[in-house]
Length: 161
Length: 161
Image 1 (cartoon, rainbow over the protein chains, first blue to last red):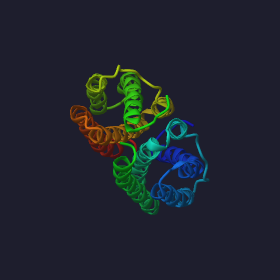
Image 2: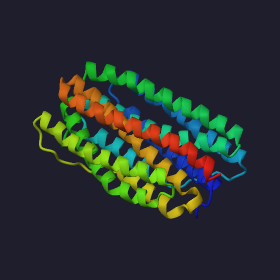
Image 3: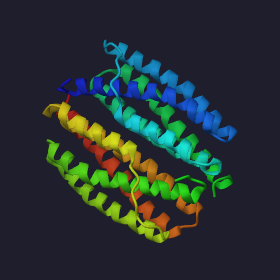
Image 4: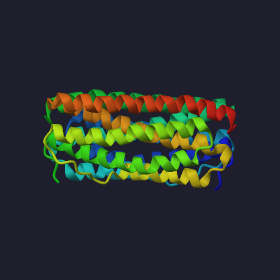
């Protein structure tokens, strides 16, 4: 698809982010299972539920702009998920949680950048309802990153020094 | 390499980030060439110079911890660079700059997450000089993201509506 204007760019980015969130729904249970601390496992499990909700919310955004929800392979999230899997395979227990948190924070930052663009573009295009839905997810991604920040300090202090 | 503790994790992340920065040194000139506005082209050119400096700074950090500077393939940055190339190929001129800015902001956010972890871990491990060097880069990545934010608003207002 040739991207001719901001509308096309918005739709393409929605498709990319839809695929990214779906990949994350598959990856998060593996990260939860690999976590050694109860707090981190619970954080991943909680974020899995949020992420399932983000998938539905993107479908709602597609509805708002009268487009069918379709996904486009998100190469960056593929790379991020691969790095998360490598982290699980390569770390021994002492370094596991710090490594998982790092991998997860990269994912969150990727999503913060994506939703930041989507919100800006939705507003520019006059899609107020879509912008509000996307802003809700953006706020949740930022909160997830903050939660990981606080767990990172606990984790590296307690275990992986 | 099996990652046994926070030191190993820090070294592995440095290698990953070293590779990521080197990939970016190759990608940024293509993004500068593809930009349609002078402001965006200049921003990419300026950030290329900063990025070359980030490569050297990581080499200095390896020196600080008495390790040889070696790179490990960064799968996430590979994906991010692929997305940037797709954006150049798929966008017509009207949507080009908004798309390039989005791709670049994802890169910046990836790096913000990486350097955020590296700074935290360097401090935990007592590598104060390394932490200061990494903090300098972190600050520059955040400034680059802010710069892109301001260009995004100009770009989408002016061209890609």
